[in-house]
Length: 279
Length: 119
Image (tube, rainbow over all chains, first blue to last red; front, side, top):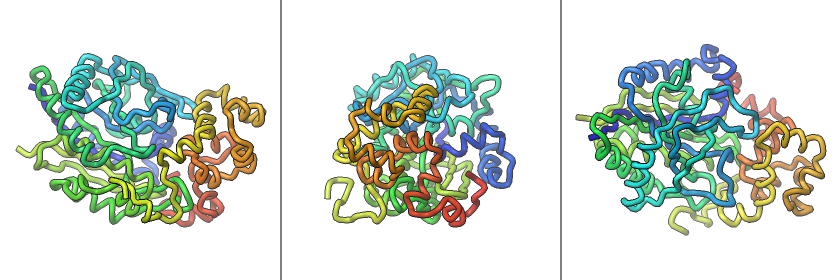
């Protein structure tokens, strides 16, 4: 049977990608972020999962409001880098695993998650910033990837509880796949931040630390939060954090936390947590 | 109260991007979504009026763009990620766009941050 070997929650703030492209990882402003990911990169290189499923949201790079899927999964062998409106970043295309993707979609749909299946999908910061933080792109991305795009921008959004259940269904799909197949699962976005409206710049570090604490535990308080409460406490765009519950749902009830970091320099709480099933 | 949103609990200085907002701002967002190539961005910058004419914007929506009235766009159903593509063409990066919404200069806004070098 297949196995989920790593769960990772991480922010995907676009400025991280800009700093990465400029080579600012060691500067005073950025090293508190990038240095925290060094042991995570080493860990992932050591356990080397076959595939990483990355739950992220598109920020208007590929999807538009003419048709907007609640949950969409890539089923291609390669995903090109998109132009989000600011030019294409100098990154290699992302290798996919269409065979596993189709298996995953089939299992999720038969288990009542009505996924939009995408044979073409352009990658953008929501997906690529976690890639930059957790994997070395030289000479090429080291494993294969499955993008899982979630609607967190046009309400009505899927509930936190639904995201958590999706994680559980993903776990089931992985467990009936080929023997020895290993998977890392990422929940990305957030943490607290607000980009739209006069409340721009709202940041709540206390909330973010609490969220990380809950995630290490049973996450019940997070699963039951409404979008209203999440936006009130953490900012309108912080509702992205529901994607971290997809990751948490895919892990066992009790987990061992391996890495944790928090940095809030500008407008967004940049959080990191990694975990594995508790045996 | 719907299942997830409570219209009676208005979050100050916030505009939730609901279906009706998305419908209202559709043309503005469609314009934003078109700006995904160097050619499109150059065409918009070169001749704003002709470029805007392609997307069915109302006169009021066109005026918001002419005035660089970004908070007006958000109030009128611009989604922040699509608006950001528009403002970038005019030199307003995310933090400048934000400072304008909050009614501050960019310099004033930076002073409110923990580590303003991490832009």
